[in-house]
Length: 127
Image (cartoon, rainbow, N blue to C red; front, side, top):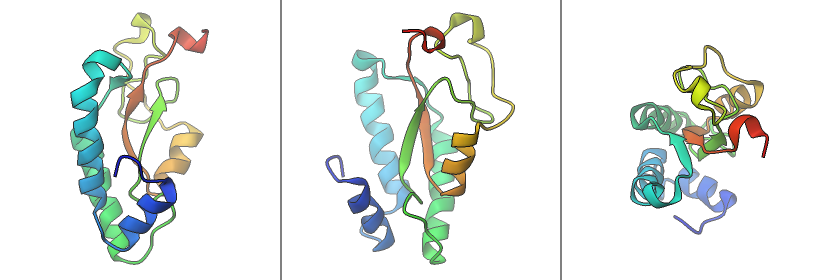
């Protein structure tokens, strides 16, 4: 699954070669294995991600997928995703939980993408 294109992943989900839950678990395991040395992810919520993946699998089973349904995605920590930390890479915001979704997150959610986490960045994207 690691080297598959977005199109191949979408097709694999549609043909039920693998489920979104399996795909999401695969990437979450890779993050657990490598994030200590890479520090690529600031926050991960495995339970939320797997719940989103389950909902995506249901949409696929109902025959209502979009090309992004069930695809794990991550976004820079500058975008608000409701219920997720949004630190903008700053210690000053380390306890801030986003009360709403940014437009880009709304669009990913509407497309059925699975949020697997927030990625690291320079403070306030000033780098």
